[in-house]
Image (cartoon, rainbow, N blue to C red; front, side, top):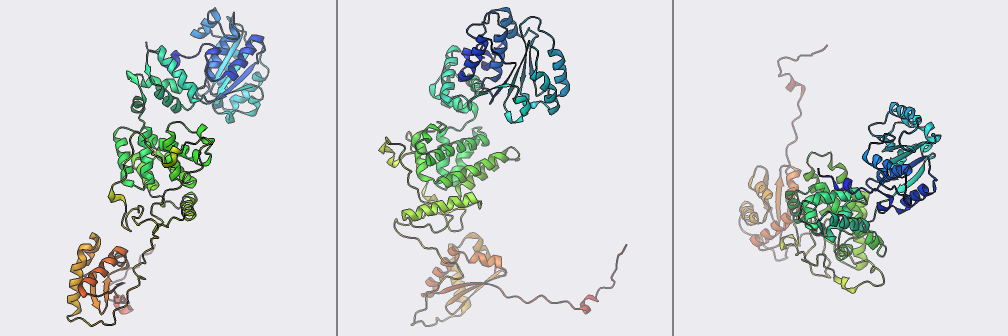
Length: 576
């Protein structure tokens, strides 16, 4: 029968436990010198060795021939405890035995002397799950246990354990293991299991395990179906996007290219990637960028290691600290609600669109992000964008990372193996009323100016040599309407064709458009519509004209009098 790797390779002695030498050496010394405590509390995150060390300690204190503090594994006590046939070593799960009655039964049973070994040992896993009454029932025997009794408690949530219990136990804190330690351990296990594991794939699995050995072995077990376990095999098996795809996604966000970002996400979705997993990887990349941005020298030792240094420095040059924080907050808010939404894909796409349009939010963090970009522009003397919704220019890189910084990072390529192509020309700019605006195509050094709204657009003064044209106003208006129609958006064309809703006329030097309501008037007050009418009027009349839009004046609603109401035959008053 096949046995999972984390069970098959569970350490049998303290020397086999990796990454927790500060605890194993202490326990070995206590066993060797017979200076054992009556109660231990093991604290730490999942998969770091708490239960494993508890089982080893239970065998070591009962071993007939301990070897330098380790259980020998050969005597009857060691073999019996390992096989689970010794009834004096009891392992309880507090998650399912958390009532006061369970603890009372344990307390009544614990007073009896062991039958086959030297000490009766109780291992209580997830002890923080005990109820308050159960903790109180355990308190007295934990404080003054019989000579033959030992308690080993394990928990992942120290804050939930009462202080009265903590003060009666000897505490040992298990820490997360470094990725390099886990990676070397995985390579060793893979060699013993005849698995072909790449060093890069081992590093990736180590980072994904978040410092837990058990998680890393479970992930390796999951990937063992491949003949050769490389990075692509890990990405494929675990449903991850990969560092290059995530880097391209962030690059599309910084270019304000919503279409490309959504296309990348759609391809990841079709490949079976989980939306939450994609957003977490994007958040990890932003975290590394933030660390290098705020701590250029120390950040290299703090980053996750999932992305190349060149890629990170490329994004550091193009983002401010406030921008990174705002993007991370947007992603974290989405991740916190992703589990409860009915359509996770839509929620993730909404998050990406919000990131592409960095002016979409009105939170304090979002405002700080935009202000920081504007301040950086002013300091560098970069011309201001025509609108706050436009993409901002690239930022300068921070200080070099240490005294030995390589000048090759002067002009970075984020993806050295296959450079990301620039967006197509159609993304260089968007109309004023588009979803978002990309960087303007104006020449460097020229300061763009804001176009004036339609109502206040200054009209050029008519020439002093102006002479009225022959023909009536209606005919001239029809000629102007025919000339301007192809240049108008579809919605404005439809309004202009319906004379019941929109009428027009030419009053001297002014093109006047009247609409039924204010909503329709606003459609004609857009800057592109204004320019189209001015150009059409200039072509038809041969001179500069003015353009005016207003809501059509209608008669006031007739006020009903008392005589009007008397036309009804009967009025019924209903009362209770």
